[in-house]
Image 1 (tube, rainbow, N blue to C red):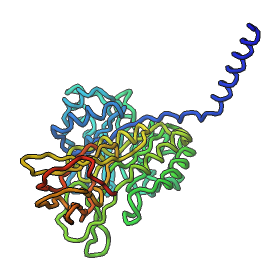
Image 2 (tube, rainbow, N blue to C red):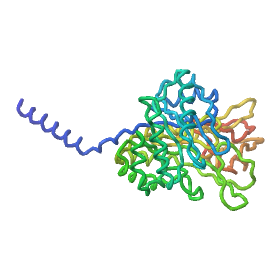
Image 3 (cartoon, one colour):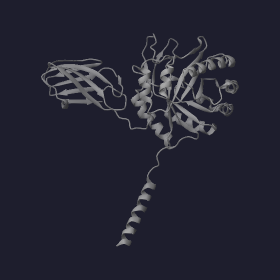
Image 4 (cartoon, rainbow, N blue to C red):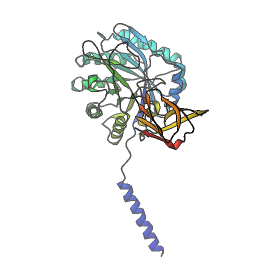
Length: 400
């Protein structure tokens, strides 16, 4: 009996080993970082930073920019909040692609002054990122600029650049990438906006090609936002982001799809391109951002969680008057449902609000959506009111 028991245990152990060998290996963890791109920080940044801490390791913060007409300006960053956050910080310097040239001496002066200001406030950046949409033909000059700038940066400060897929065909690219410690390949808003904001298949292809050229770590900059396109008088589209433009015309909304980005993230974890170090999400959302994912959805995508939306009808009642709302209980921002129906209700009066129109029969109230509006994960929106004898929770039906 003891020998039989030993053989049985050995057989079970071998079976477990074989079974484990058949299981898919977990994907390679990818560092998750976050851009903060607001030019003026608000009190809401404090809570947004706190809510983002569990999902993102590093903050890449717009610090300084140079534009053709406006010249140099600093972003109004709340350095006390940034210091209190405690995560590694990369200061981002935006050099507009339309600048007639790059003035190394002036850039060095502006960057040094910005770094000194941050350090005096207790913020010591781990890195500096130069964001410059250089024309491909001007990459040799840009490479020289970076080489000279790097010599003048403080010892130990890592230098990175934002990079464009259009540079992939340039013979100058290997030398450019050797001039910096790492690169951030931007794969959103890099094509004609009429073709869309983001193409996951192209993003994957560009990342594979970049990994074959780069000998140093690189990151992918991914979108968590949307824009609107407006036609101008010349027929070319005008891009509207968070700041409304005083222009008439129909707006075509373009929004990065969280499900698409979640699938791309899974692919990159399972089969990462050579030298891919992580993903950087553009950008930290604040309450009231009209064209950005909620932080709940962004965090869920970054963590590789399954995305799902779930609607619940809630109402408050006072003296027979019901205020009716929809709550998004899932982790996915989603459009309001097309139809919400209340069955077997005897109601004296009712009406829809916030884009819902009421259709009433003797035993049913149907609220029909007139315009598509996204509700953030965890968000709530009133859809109407009703004066009824009684409403039970199970009488509601929600139709996507």
